[in-house]
Length: 488
Length: 95
Image 1 (spheres, each protein chain N blue to C red):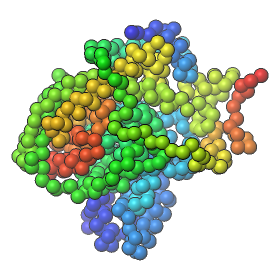
Image 2 (cartoon, rainbow over the protein chains, first blue to last red):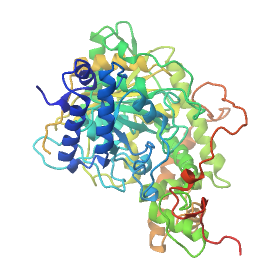
Image 3 (spheres, one colour):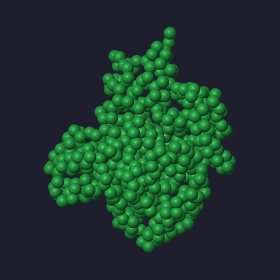
Image 4 (tube, one colour):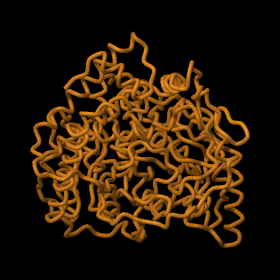
């Protein structure tokens, strides 16, 4: 029998149902694989006791024929999700020792459906980063390496632990979050599938806030079907998040394999950016050809305000972050560094507790919201955001889905990008989707000349995740799946 | 627009982040490089455009103004760096 950790969620689900193995055996196989893969630094904490207890409970429910949709499936949880009594620190020093007495809605939904928690996954501090180099717990390593090289590469960020763990088969699937590309960019860097659903599809309750008008939770998985299975369980309307939307959650898995004949696929000309490697553009052209061969109609479209999405994002997101992160003051939770008076205690705590990137963004946010600058920066950025959204609204008259590259390059090395603005440019293709609140999926399309995964992005109409899974699967069928050669 | 070192110190204080004197020039450079980059937004004609307030067209949800949760002060103060009798403890604020 093949190793249990090599099974997709769909395959593990079938094996558990047929009682080919137990949930406990499956969980033990993952715990064993995790212990051998610590060099990747994907987990900030492993929860083996809890995992085994949850797996045993799953076996009991399977025996009584009461299995849920994810019964016995071992998952990794990004450290941004509140998990009751378990390390929840957004990979920040400022939340030292924080163990919430409550559970996030997304993880509650997963446990309701029978999933098993293996541990908490590393990430960029407060989800601010595109390389997983800003974590207080150190860099996450990408399981992928350049051909004939031993040099470490970044897994992307901020959900770098989630992407690395899924790619290395040290969880069956993972939760992640995406504010500007934090699900799709690491998925593209690791040859995995990641979907950021429509804003409001998943509850944000119990997810540590970064930029509240942009943050959305979603899964990272090994293939399109697994991502569909996970999102079905994660999504829900929630009285505790007034921005969660009361819209039925469809059976996303049902569209896998549905023909794409007649679907109109938009190719936005503004996504041809100077300096993008030729192999990324070539992959994009190849994907359009695959879809055309399967009967889709390729339509060139224009999204004229694309180039302004990233600078507008770097006003809106830091502004919201500076407000959301005001709560870390050394009083109610986490780190406290004493001072001469209460203000110096706040200042000392936040100086010691926040890393450099977080401090930079909080300061940018504070500046753009400060007296005299609010209209020039924040209001203007929100107006540009309206224009970005209108670009997409117009596109939906002509097309059903938009196809773009996911990232402007494959994975790079730690330390390779030190200039903040250069790092921000990683999200150039993904950030428009957050600004317009749309769903976007990243699906592996092929390997670069150096043997690294490259991702394709599909952007959908609001709440039309189903079409993303349908077309994403069509790409996966044409491109195949990609697995990192094991070296750890 | 750009920031000078005095503004950097003012922003840091507004954000309640202690910044050492040797870090001020570094932050001045970093913040200015970000601010110069976002200045390209000035090219966009935003005349008559409404700022975006919600990406999803939906009516704001409302609920009755009633208490729906609470009565567990031990849980609430459990993670505090300093607490006493279910109160958060802070340095003296009022003389």
